[in-house]
Image (cartoon, rainbow, N blue to C red; front, side):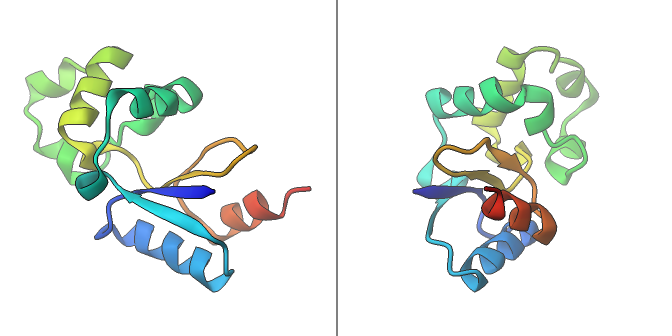
Length: 118
């Protein structure tokens, strides 16, 4: 089953969920805050997408970190520790469908291509 990962109050996640609902695509929503995030799941994300892609350095969670904390994120292990501690720092939404690569972020056109590839 297709799974959409994110945080329910994120505007971009809301847009992605609305798009999936409008297209009548069956999916499960996994909220990092309520459903949790563990190291094995996070490692699968990092292995496929890379920690640099997953780490949202443009959001408020990143900007609230002090300079020393930001400077300390120089490896996958450091980034994953931060993401486990603060899941809101993960770029979202993250879409995972069986037999397809993971898709990070949302635009209607990217989802259209993702679900209509032959």
